[in-house]
Length: 372
Image (cartoon, rainbow, N blue to C red; front, side):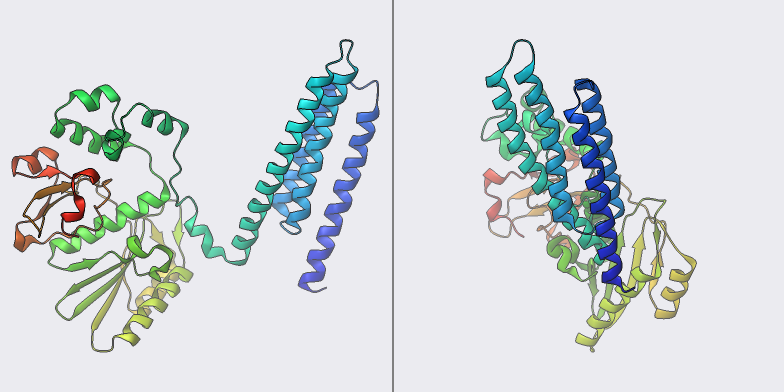
């Protein structure tokens, strides 16, 4: 039996199973001796069954989404029937339940279709799993916090880390440092952790006199696996960074992918001396390590992000000489390049920056004039 015939058989079996469960549940709904609580309990068990099968078999997702919609409809009908037939009938309330249930079922259906599509794409392209959780989504707490500030104050990212009283009462140097300290302590998304890791590795090369292009930060998925390109004279180092959890392992496929993009870069730039290094916070499998050696890829395993590194960028405007410092969460941070020859530098604390005559960068204070 071929691949598609197997998948078709799986889907038909799934449909038959769900139809059988649905028919049994419809009999329960018609029963006069089964209580409302037992009917809802039965529904919840049926829903769990559908969810489990959906995880195991990700084919036919539009139909499965429709199945979820039908299941919720049956549960809503139980409530509607109860409201209409109870001793003191609540006809109007039952109609509200019916309409709200319809709207919710449509939303659930659309959400399930999106969910199954993502799962299907991940099964077809496993590398997409590497990009999960790469989007920061504001929490309800974040949204409530923003409501407490004025329009002008909302332009300052520091408010994301301070209470209103702290923000308005503390001197700028203290509130900026407090925000920076809390930024490092606060839980972060995988996307942000990866970005910070690239910044840190890039900083280390800048300290060695390399001109670093942060390709991964600016191009995202279009970086082709070249997170950093470090240049010094005719020497070019292409770096890929993976700040993964300790329990995850780098396998040979990741080394092959990196080798491919390095080979392409060398092929497009035959006059350049190109090296490649793979940085990771975790370890490689033995086979991946052997492949890296054979392919001439340098390895930096178990290389951790040092959160104590000097992450504040002190920049001098090329337009009017204004001295500005940028914190890691500021809007122009990644666009700002540090040129040591011009008196620019990295530092650890807001006090150090302000003591040397630099002020904090805000979007509403003319950042467009500063060097990028």
